[in-house]
Image 1 (cartoon, rainbow, N blue to C red):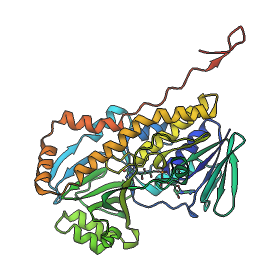
Image 2 (tube, rainbow, N blue to C red; image 1 turned 30 degrees about the vertical axis):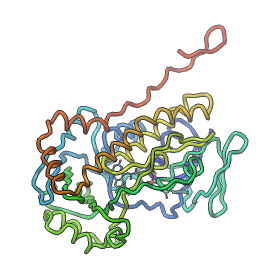
Image 3 (tube, helix red, strand yellow; image 1 turned 60 degrees about the vertical axis):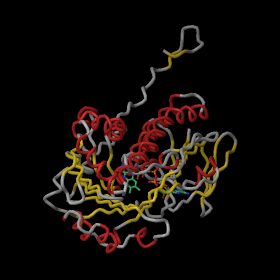
Image 4 (cartoon, protein in one colour; image 1 turned 90 degrees about the horizontal axis):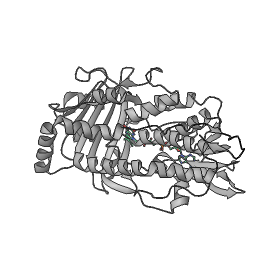
Length: 398
Ligand SMILES: Cc1cc2nc3c(=O)[nH]c(=O)nc-3n(C[C@H](O)[C@H](O)[C@H](O)COP(=O)(O)OP(=O)(O)OC[C@H]3O[C@@H](n4cnc5c(N)ncnc54)[C@H](O)[C@@H]3O)c2cc1C
């Protein structure tokens, strides 16, 4: 079996690794000529570090990123609101939460695929089903054929557009500025992550190891406010005037060219991700807001689940539909839970903000723990028992 993967982001690379581990031939195509990522950082939660470890990609052993030791929610000036029990949840689940630079994660995934062809500057513009298989064509005229096509081409996926037809992105009325920067501040301890919640804006400051911090800032913006959406450094500093010293310092130390603006967008949940021998993984299938930190995590789960179903079933198309069914309810829940949390995080009315902060402070720890544990709990699909022949030669599964 040969699988063509469109997209060499977290979803495409993990899918390719999972397939290679099961002996499947893979070819990967990515539009970007230089294998760049959008910069910034990622929180890779316990569910995803567990899947990666099952694929022999151990972030901790590889020295990539920093295990999250402490997670604090604070007011804009840095007063503590609540410590989230991420460390003890990770212990219970038996797998760490690791904060990484996106580039480091993608490099590690790419290195784990040594020997597998990854074509860069290969923007796939169309695919066709041919003789029970599939062919892809790139903008520069390159083409390839395989038995399966996996669309891992992100939130603006061309593969998804062919499966689902044209669809508008859903805008959520705020922008996210992100960057990583060499950073040292007494308030950001080793393995620390701090979120500062304000009125219609938030800030995150996270140790990603190697003397670097990943920071992100959000701000509610009107659709026509182009200046804020682009986010010059001066504009960002103005938005966070009066916030904690470490917040302003992280922005000040970052070169303008390293700051990326990302609008808060997702899509209505797609019920059907497949079309014959073609399927979707990651943001192409289920883009979600960043609030639960599970976009990349669920993409990693997808890749593992897809390889599992494709290699334990007999018929390719049936196996792909089984993979999609296995992922539908979990990812639907992650998309909607991210939206619910995002609405609470970005509220602007002072009374609502006061009530939110009171709730954060006084919510029983058992509730806080349950809420944070739910998205991080994930069971790997069970490996079926080997197929054995019966004595009478009809075959059977035992
Ligand atoms: C600000 C921000 C913070 C986030 N924080 C977290 C977090 O803490 N934890 C977490 O788990 N998730 C987080 N996410 C979500 C996470 O980044 C995404 O869910 C994840 O990157 C999705 O991976 P992907 O491979 O599906 O898509 P992408 O990373 O978008 O990769 C898609 C790839 O496809 C390629 N491509 C696109 N079109 C084509 C084409 N036509 N032909 C060939 N190649 C193509 C692109 O070049 C790209 O390499 C965050 C997202 C944002 C925006």
